[in-house]
Image 1 (tube, rainbow, N blue to C red):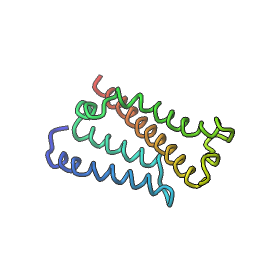
Image 2: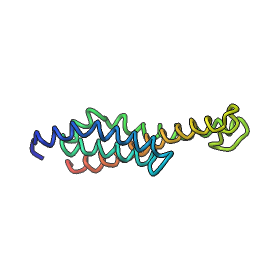
Image 3: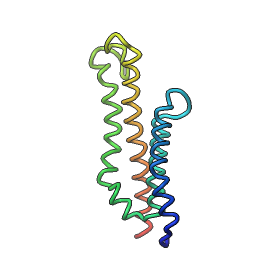
Image 4: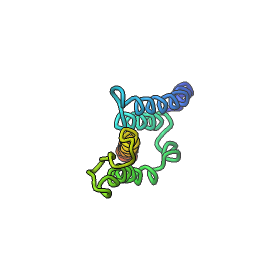
Length: 139
């Protein structure tokens, strides 16, 4: 794609709002449609939009595959790590009722950790898939 300053400016201006919208979708997920999966997909969409306008090489300097690929597993580990404490203390996986007197607060933080793991996994997986397909076009 040839250099287009208007599209580049549009993407530079839109990306922060895309990230903010993803955070809104994540935090609003408790009260309506949304959550970690949707937020991860929105963040990945912003990265893919950057690739389409600025090129794969420039985006991979900002979001390198050496960070994206381990992040897939790290998101899964965050999810697992947020569920294991309940099992270690005699409750079920993802059961936070054993922590403290305020069970609602414990569930809030537990679900937040799960959602962070989901965001990291979904975002990283979608970016890695796009990198794989975009990289094949060159060869």
